[in-house]
Image (cartoon, rainbow, N blue to C red; front, side, top):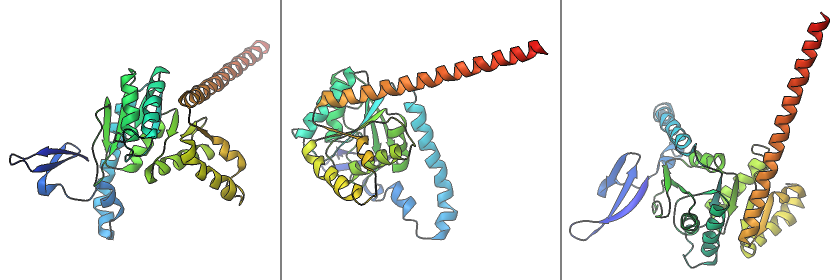
Length: 283
């Protein structure tokens, strides 16, 4: 559900929301979201009736996401606070990052909102790259920013989060709040557990993230909850060029590994054909 503001004939501020193909205004807007209605269902009767039908809506979000994003070029997902002011250091960094990624041939995917997301989308668009926004229905949502070229608005967080990972070659995480932390640790978990491979995770904003990394090392590693090698999954930098170079090198390494696997498979198949031919000749 997206939200926008307009004016009534008498000058009163009007709040509009889009729910799928529907447009809600005035008293029909309501305060709950699809995620709330799914997760807060208190009665078993809801599970047996409404949730079964919701499964079709959830499926439709995946289908729409897959269909819309399937032709994206190589892309990088960029995360950061919606509350950051346009003149903040992280927004200036995000704008420069978006431009650098575009010049390196990447599309940029954000959550489509204001703050850091809008800055990254702006930098991408102004550099001639493809700027993508994956919005989410929230009670206080501010809608898709004006710098997005291709947008999808999701009802469910888990469908949206799948698209952030599936269509990106890397994550870049700038200063942000709970949502940013959620995306960061999901990405780290997916890489650590091997659900995705060779997936660079870049933290930008050394001063902002240093305390978190110190805690990971001094508490989680020290207590054996993660391994010291797990911290190597993170690239920490304030330099846009360093961030982009890290992503480009990781993609090149993955491509080389994949090519080596293909060459080995071709060689094995050729050897098996020769062995079969030799066996047939002896027969």
